[in-house]
Amino acid sequence: MSTVYKILSALFGILGGVIAGALFKQLWKRVSDKDEAPEPTDPDYTWAQILPPAIVKGAIVGGVRAVVERSGANGVRRVTGSWPTND
Image (tube, rainbow, N blue to C red):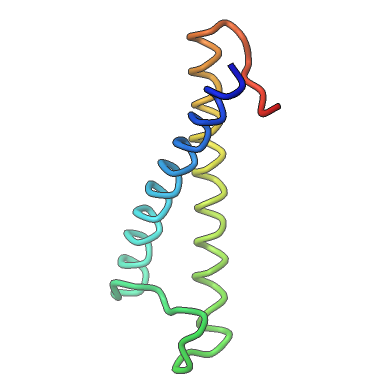
């Protein structure tokens, strides 16, 4: 069971990353009227312009990841009758 859940957990993580990236991209377009957030290494932007989108993106990624992983664990519990562990 543990090996199967590790594989599923990796898939849940990938799915969460894709969802979070899409959510952030849509939010950024609405807020800034630009297609992409500035890269941290772009010399044309200041710290004040780089940090807010990075912090928001991190929060979105963390929240989506938690929702996707928790939902996946609940799904495994429904199917198997026990809560999965990452042992």
